[in-house]
Image 1: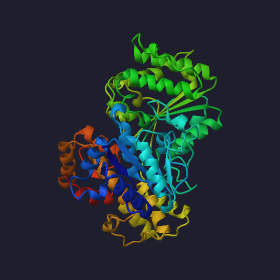
Image 2: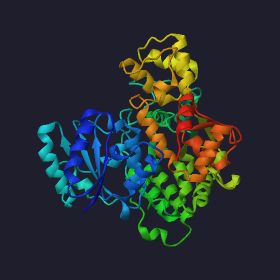
Image 3: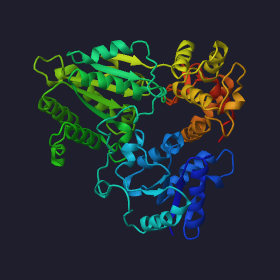
Image 4: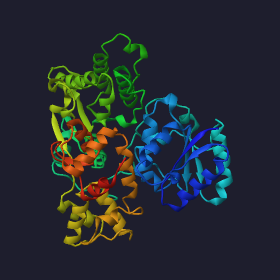
Amino acid sequence: MSKIFISYKRDRELDELVARTLYDEFSKEHEVFIDQRIAPGATWARRLEEELRASDFVFLLLSADSVLSDMVRGEIELVRSIKASERPTIIPIRVAFMGEFPYPLNAFLNPLQWVLWSGEEDTPELLHQVRTALAGHDLEFGDKAAAASTSSVARIPKTVTKEHSQAVVDEDFYVERPGEAQRLAAIRDERADTLHVVGPRHMGKTRFIDRLTGAAEEAGKTVVRIDFKLFDAESLADLRSLCGALCDWLAEDLELDVPDPSYWDRGLVARRCLKFMSKSVKAAGSHVVLVLDEIERVLQTEGKNDFFGMLRALHEERKQPRSAFKQLDLVLVATMNLHRATGDAHQSPFNVGERFELVDFDGEQVRVLAKGMGLHLNQPSCNRLHALLGGHPLLTQRALVAHRNGALEVDADMAVDELLQSRSPFADHLRWCSFSLKQLSDSEFNAFRGSLKHGRSLDPELFWRLEGAGFLRGTYKQPVPRCELYAAFFSSETR
């Protein structure tokens, strides 16, 4: 008997139909978990993570709605964070959906085989294919050669377009932030530099990096984009694993030979990594832009200070007349201000070079976004939307899309209670918030609640993590929820 976890988008008719069909069929022989069986209350997020970690298989239902779900993405990223030897097997099931997966799901899922359900007439074949997968055999669909890959690091597709990104704006309309034009001009320049891009989750960093790398490529530069959220537990285990994964990725994208595993056996791992990077830039034959995204994940790696010291050394080596790094732009992308959380300031790469911080939309940018999406909201309505969501780019976009589709009335009388309902456009995102808060220890969660209820200060490191997650703003001495919606939601969250 296997333990099975069903991951799906709630409140969608077809998704729930297929999820229930799978539960009814396979619970006869296996232990199957579906979150419809969790009673509402304090244990929901903890129970969800416990069940996912204990599962042998994950039935991942992928529909046009679920591939955009914060919760589905969170569950997949949790699976990736588990050691490979303990990780459940994902069985992707396309639910009346044959479109491309958005980034980063495409990096996780494109190599996997899948099964298609287009309607109830496909149910017998669906059940047959899933039984086949549970027995350890190949599914009928998908790329079998790619599925056999043993690479421990998921790969970014060669082209990461706006369709692959979770854009903070609708369709082709983009709200440019102050300072963006200068950053795009600088990346086109021949002079190499280090750029630190920072902003909480759901701030639009991916779309900005798309624009930045596009400008670099237009200037004839070669872009290598490495996303640390695609590194699994083994790749982040220690300095050697981390440097090995980074150099393998760099070499593959530049179409060079990857270093032999014995390359790392002679010690001085960080120095060897730096040397290999230098040789790779020389061999590339053009100016290289190296983007290291979600670099805060390195904080969980043993030897993180050595790794960050290596990046600082790369920056400093540009001062040498014949350094290869004069032909390398280094772009460090993070959800938090890492110069506050990384060791010796003289060994940190986050207090040198240039810094670009993405912040929430102001009231005027909310109005511009609404107009760009073809909506004619009056000023009081825009003001109320900004007050509720604090200019949160992703949530503002979702509110405007819901308004355009008739699922939400955006006006001057909007109440926060409307946005907390189980079928509101924000329900999935708020479930993800609960799921994310599960990563806090009980003492950290109690401190978080105490800061909301009584205005207490927080431990600086805890504040930086919650700020990076996009939940808080202000300072660790005076933390406040990022927006009115979060304030109302977090006040009801308990353990």
